[in-house]
Amino acid sequence: MECAKATLLSSHHRLTMCHLAVRTSKWIRVDPWACLQQNSQSPRAVLEHHRTLLKQMSGCIFSDVGTPTDYQPGIIRQPSLPIQHSLPPSKPTPGKIMSKIGDDIGHICCYRTRMQPFTFVDENANMGTVFRYEELDIRVMLLCGSDTLLSFCIPGLWAAPDLKVILGDFGVVCVPREGRDPNCIINASPLLLKYKHNIIVVRMDSDLETSFVSSTKSRRAVQCGDASVPRLLPQPVIDYILQQRLYMQSTSG
Image 1 (cartoon, one colour):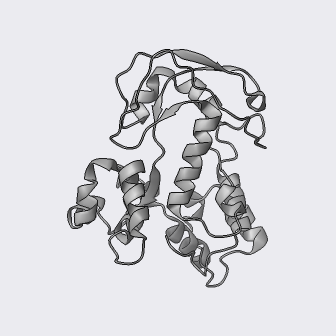
Image 2 (tube, rainbow, N blue to C red):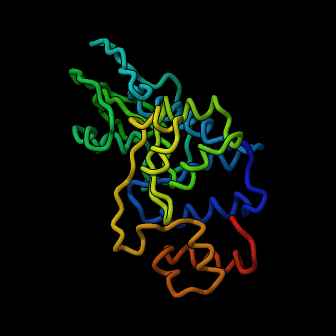
Image 3 (cartoon, rainbow, N blue to C red):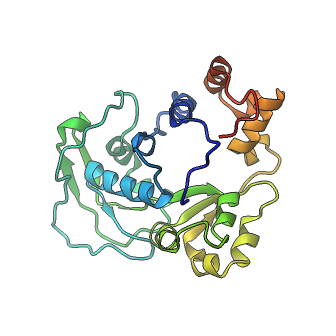
């Protein structure tokens, strides 16, 4: 989006809460890059950053949506430069994640070219243990709610070149929000219809309270002292909010 919301909490608080939320996860990590930049970064810039970073760290082959990789057997692709990271040993890096995915990559990627796999050794000292990888066709995608998907249709809100890259080169995974059906939004928009094949709509179980969790819903629950807060947020995040007295008034973010 072209500008950051003026009412958002500082990036320090938001980043800290994200870290606390995934602290016990063995496969989810938080990257602070966007928060550490001097200026607000567009979703397109963040997507491009992570695609470049994963290329360097994993040595895997990337291709844009619907554009197969030009596969050349026998060519060894490795990171050209060592990548510095400050993640604790227990947290996943792209290399660690890739080493565990193996043949199951087809189940989590929407697009994979038919190719004969080969392996190579990544000896990047910053990654610690040496890993072996198959050549994988991996996609970085934008995960968003259907409210964000709807915002793509508002004239002037997003830069047209950014939307073309996000929808055309990366693709979108859309989580439904209450009152905003992603399929209805897509079918009502010529732009989204053009890239419909690149938009994945997550199927939600309407019987589960967490099916439609959103940051807005969580903030409102905190502000109102709603009893549903423990079901919406991890306890470490709740503790941090209380300690820092966040969202206690009309602050959004």
